Structures are given as C-alpha cells and as structure tokens.
Length: 202
Ligand code: MN
Image 1 (cartoon, rainbow, N blue to C red):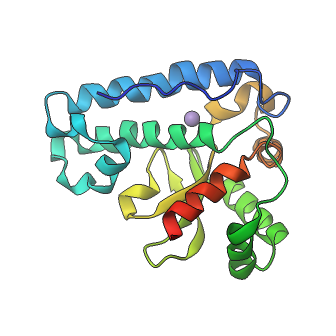
Image 2 (image 1 turned 180 degrees about the vertical axis):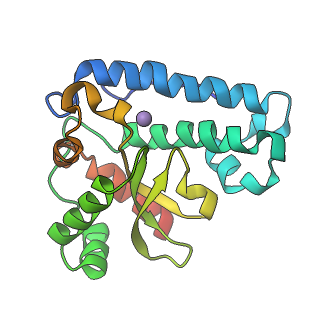
C-alpha cells in the first residue's frame, strides 16, 4: 500500500513564495487523496508491492479497468512526491556542476532554460505540469503533461517538475499563474535536482 510521504519542511517554510495554507491543503488533502485513490484502485493486485515509479513505468501491464485510475492517482502520487523534494526554503539560485553544464549545452544558458521552462509552464492549458526530463536517449528536454500524467509512463526521467494546477497557487496568486511561476525559481532545491541528474546519467 502507498502512503503519504511527510513534507520535508513546515507548511509555512516556503513563504512568501508558496503560502502556508496552500501547502497544507495541497499536501494534506490533494496528495493524500491521490494516495488513497491509488490504493483503492490497486487493492488486491500485484501492484500493491511496487514502488509507484515502477508501477508507472509499467503502466501497460495494468488492466484496462484500472489503468486510468493508476494514471491519474499513481501519477498524482509520484508527481507530488517529487515536487515536495525539489522545493526548499534554502532553494533558488542556479544549479552547478554537470547539470549546469548539460543545461547550458542543451539550452544555451541557464537564463534561456529558465525562460523556455517558464513559457512552457505558462502555456499549459488547464491542469498539468511542466517538466525538465531526461529522454530515453539521455537528452535533457522541457515538456508539459496534462492532468497528472507522469513522464515515467513514457520512460522519461523527471528531474524538475512544476505543478500548474490551480490548486497549487490559486489561494495566493488567483489567476496570475505567471507570478507563481516566477516565485518558483526562488525555492528550487537544485542540490536535489543535481542528485537526480547524477543518478539518471551515471
Ligand atoms: Mn498538485
């Protein structure tokens, strides 16, 4: 059975960029609901023993009657688990080392990457995510996914994800999604993103 991972910081730790009330509801209610509904969907199947990341990579093995529930709620569980980890009250700034080099090689500069990622996130129609991922060919790429669809289902490795569902920002930012996206850059835990990059590329 899947469980809600504890937040690695207090609800108010990301203030003023993400407000305490949003974090409390986002983690305690939204993420908890993905966990509960995922558990309900896979109850009594072999998937109960799997890590959620493995489950999503093997989504084709899930029976047709459960597949959409696993895409929605398994994706929701995996996406949010990553999201909490790549944020930090000590975040912001720029990545360093091999990740910075790879970003500069792929996108020209960190600032250009920031611009492209922000534009992608602003452009998500309705609910979804913007991602920095590693493709099957080992390339960095910026993508978006609708709803809770996880890049893992396409054998892509997510390094950085930004939740642009309204539940992630509406209490503080209302319709001003671009302001939420600007604030995001102040709280990115680049040390964690670098760790994920190293794991994926070693
Ligand atoms: Mn969310």
